[in-house]
Image (tube, rainbow, N blue to C red; front, side, top):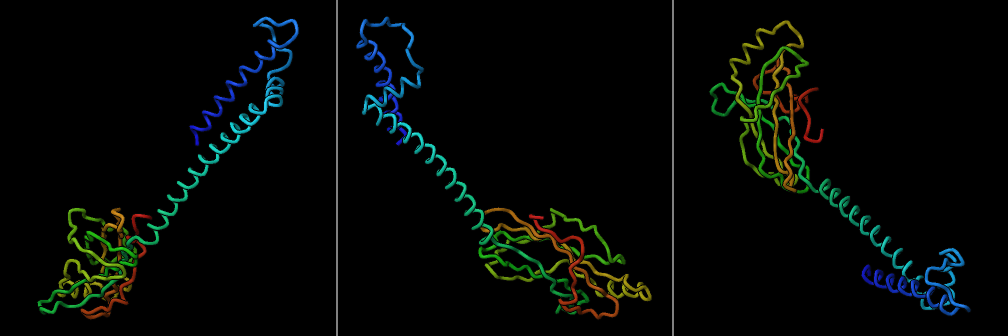
Length: 246
């Protein structure tokens, strides 16, 4: 279509350039080749198109083709933008999303005095979360507003896959029950000063080969508890929770 428009335009231009010469040659008394036109160029164009039907239709076709070209380019840009928006929306709706929830604290079945601090990684998206790896750490603290939770990039383990709406259970470093009892004993009579923090990061690919991560931090209040703490008592902390999107 663009090539056709250029051809039509050049035919019209050639016709236009010949018309004034024929008019000058037919005038009574003749005219030199360099004589000035008797009317403005726009008037010559008007006479040319109204006296020569072929030139008129050629001019109309040239204008129409130009407008069609501009419209086609605009439609192409609009379609391209629409495809890009649709692709982004599809990724948002279909990608994998990993969330982390507390799994509680309980003694190892071996009965050797170790306590597990477990977490659940759950994929709430519609595509598998691939190459799932994690870093988990824990610490006792007397500060209910602890805000420093460093991530050790060399401490990641795992290479798992979590299917859509699937869940896996993982644990961090074990807590020694004797250490927990000693810490809890030192904090007797000091309300709101006996906490166990469990934090870390889980990394994965979101189904579109894009790396993602989720940072998490939960705390357990240890005063008056036994070695077993149910998951519902793991509270999400005010700090240390974020994703790669903010």
